[in-house]
Length: 146
Image 1 (cartoon, rainbow, N blue to C red):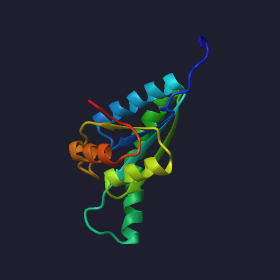
Image 2: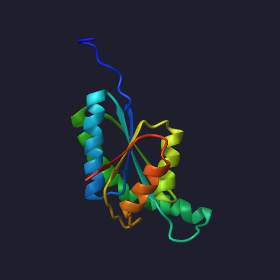
Image 3: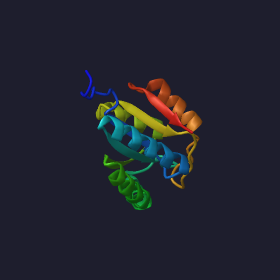
Image 4: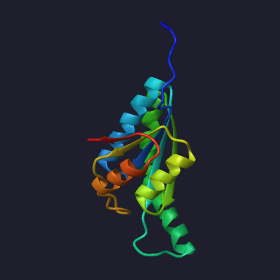
């Protein structure tokens, strides 16, 4: 088997992204892994409404979240290009753990990476509780990055 690259079980990697330093570290870890296995990365941010929201409020929040995350996503796209890795970005509104688990199942993700703790103005993630929920219910392996 020398000279032949074996297929990795981690070709599709989802990073739960909230804009924090820990989430950026998780994204960079995912890019390094993706480069090593010829994989791709989905940077996935979730904005959580504070109260039950109407459809109009959800759309407004999604627009605001896109504006907020686009700068961070832009920097990470540059890093991904340096790594030679394909990166996709997406934003959803809802409970972070539930949205991460749902997106991972829908996209048939092979590995989820999360930062240990994160904070953003949209969601004060206490990734202890979010990562615990994702670890418990995700269909695939989950890595929590320090």
